[in-house]
Length: 248
Image (cartoon, rainbow, N blue to C red; front, side, top):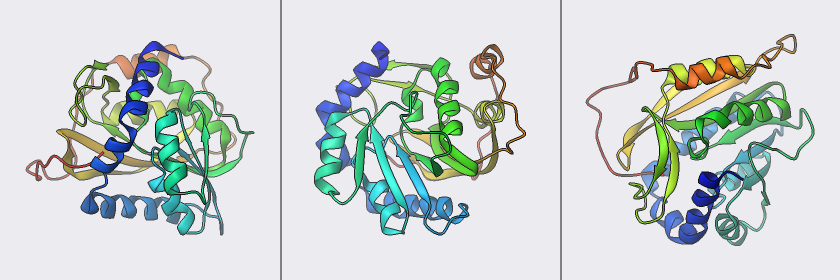
């Protein structure tokens, strides 16, 4: 495991209980339920099989299960998994790395990943996306969020919970869309959070697996150029939207 990822996981292990309580904000959860509902509506299956990557305390895993999905939550933080298993014993939770998913090809109708992809170094995100593409069924949906901005690195005093270093990578929609295209997805929908989340601008999106005729580009050089290039960060929505310290 990369040192920066290891340090991030150690921080989450240390703050799991407190972090989960701090981020359980009713108005944010209401908005996120809308995102989850949209995700389920885009999946063409009566009882879809869903993977929740970076499940944290299991709040989204449980919601998806309540809506009739067969869902498995995964996380690398033992602390977070302990909270999830205690709060939602009816759900299935596994310790697993999003870069090395331990599932057969075409196992899931949808993959949900909230609050996690931005903890990977940018150079490793293509591998994570390829793994998601591999385990999704044809036409499957990949729905996740990211933080708008530029750069990446270990933050010693993260705004969402200070004193516990974590790694963050920031993207533009254009960066993410190009990476999705290169790894076998088509971007279908983008939606900004209506608030700033602990000072960060969060974007949620939905992408669909391209047709089986799609040949995935085996080269990573172009992907890295896309991720490391400088793109204009064209904000969507009202530029004067409310700025409030809430969220994940």
